Image (cartoon, rainbow, N blue to C red):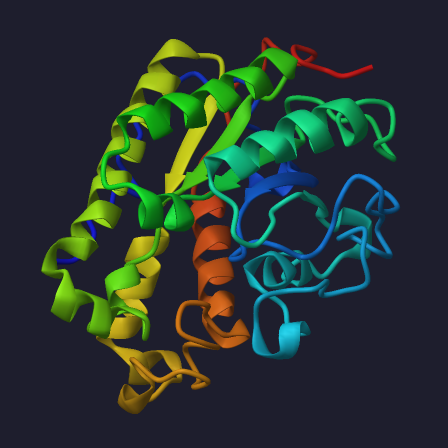
Length: 290
């Protein structure tokens, strides 16, 4: 059974602070190894010449740890240095929601969320991204409490001034090289990831309904991975790489290669570019951090 995808199913709200992806110049990212670049609040603030705050592409979970993941690919997709995305990426390998809590409450809010940022940020120019869940699913199959914690953290960001949010669902882990042996012993293992995505979708809807002045996006990494894995040759890969460790799709048993990350970045960019800006912006200064 493939993971359900919900990329387009968060209904539009007023979202007056969403002026389109072209107006976004800061990404603040929380998550696990799929997004990690080795940045923390002790690093120099990101700048046009050093958009990740660490030497590009950072320390990633790709081939040799030295190739760009989706974050690096997304940054370099903008050709104009003057309009380059500045990325505050707190993601860490192995993180669960508890790890995201530490990233938000101990890294972002006390440090880079305040005057330490190299430029003021406001609700219009910043997108908050959370991509977590793979490691949570390894520990539990029921996710109601996980989602309460997940969106409790989003509430903290909202109270701090965040108004543009993107949540990313978990990829189809059942299609990684790690899973065939596990599925032979535990055929229901894939269901926990489906369950996570279903709960994330429902909780995202509730969060959007509660905060009509926010813009909430749910991007489906599951849809991207399933499309590529269903038609590998159309995406520059080979069928023999579908479950191959150290192949063109998978760097190891669980982590994608930089080439696969490129497809994620491409889809993220196209997804965000397709989202029309608000027709008016009555909350121009709402949420601005002075």
